[in-house]
Each structure stands twice: as structure tokens, then as C-alpha cells.
Image (cartoon, rainbow, N blue to C red; front, top):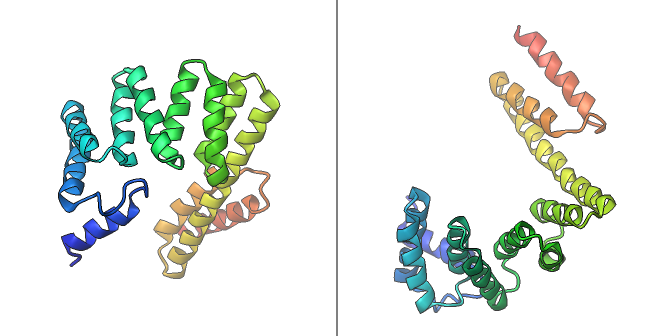
Length: 216
């Protein structure tokens, strides 16, 4: 059985570098996890109180600051949300979640140019993040730059083929083990992700049709 100490180690190493491991004690991490649990349960006021207490101890903890901003956003306190995410990005310019949500806030406030600055910076380190590409598409759309909006949306769609590939590989494993009842749904999901003009669309469709005929 995996020990609690091992789980804590994995969580600590996965947290942003802006909060050093020496700052983030086990007790503080447990407090953060309790705050996240409160948030997931819908106790946002309790979660916010806990997150703020953590921020007072470790102001450079980007993941914690992000959650504070997110709660303010859903409370429609956009001024505090913007201030919190901006501060998080000052401490850690590579905190992508803060950049994404702050850019959404700028779009909501009809400030696409400010959103563009954030996403342009984020794309320099995460050029293949489909969510960033979609956000840039929204920004270009808001700027009425429709040709570039289409370009970014098409780039984001390329990742659907990668997801389809995972479905196809999984279906092949199931088929090798004779699990046709699991193979068919995976291939159906793959087809939903693929464009009909994709070079593999018709091959997948043909295999799926054959499996369904055999199953009948």
C-alpha cells in the first residue's frame, strides 16, 4: 500500500517552483488539501478563509493564490480576482492556470488586448496547449481578426486527432484480448474526434463497421 508520506512527497514535487519545498511544510500542505476539499464540497467561504490563511504564511504559493482568485471570480468580485492572479503571475510568470483565467476575465471585461499579452507569453512555454490556442482564438475573434481566429481554432483541433489516436490504441488492446464490447465504444469515440477528411477516418469507420457486423 502506498504510504501517506509518499503521497505527500508526490504532491509537493508537483507544486509550482515559486513555492520552495522548504517553505511548504507537511502541515501547510495538509491545510491546503483541506481547503481544496472544502472547495470541492462547495464550501467556498470556508475554503477561501483557509486559502487566505495559507497565503499569509506563504505568499509565493502560486497554486494557492490561483484558488483564491478563482473563488473571487465565481463570487463576481472581479477586482480582487484580477489583483490575486496578477500578483501570482508576478511571483511566477509560468503559472499557466492564472494566465488562462486572468485572460478570460479580461475577455469578459472586453479587454482582448490585455488578454492577448498574457496568452502570448503563456504560449512561449506551452505552445501545444489546446486551451491556450482556443483562448487565443477567442481573443482574435474579439479583436475581429477572423482569419487568425480560424487559424488558432484549427491548431487546437489538431489535438483531437491525438486524443483519437489514444482511443484507437486502447481499442486495439481490447480487441487483442477479445473484449469487443469495450473495443467498439472506443472506436466510436475516436470517430467523433476525427474529421471525416482525416486519412484514418475511413479506416477506423471500416473496422468499426466490421466489428459490429460480427457482433450481430
